[in-house]
Length: 197
Image (cartoon, rainbow, N blue to C red):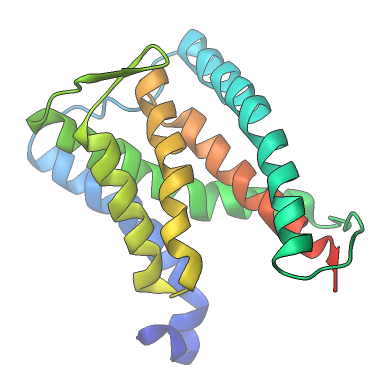
């Protein structure tokens, strides 16, 4: 509701990012829990990057092909013309530092980890143990987007959220989901700007 108020609307993304980062840290420290969802060394970090790249190469190409035909058939666009990205690095830093890192820190790091403490990871999907924390976090993540900015298609955020949660469980850290989240947002921004009506 406050996003329409001048200065609040301007600082809202940063305020939410700070809340998503420092809220969980305060609770974790207060309960004397360990922050166990960050990479614990170079080997772990490189594993997270490798996992992100493999999953991105598996998911992005078929998704873009399907989305292309959706744009033509359903949205009525007539052609694709690759849009430029003159401020790519600025957009990438914004996506990583203000969007992906805080959201993944809160949802996949804190929230999913907390639910995992009280539920079992019963399912083995592509060699990774997953449970209710994975599904519940994806549902809450999709719903949370409509609390800030309502869009009719926000229900679909559930599906990439499943990938984010899978990456967190696969690697044991949030580096891969942060990178996949930021890459997804950047890719979709570019993709949406590349269609001509």
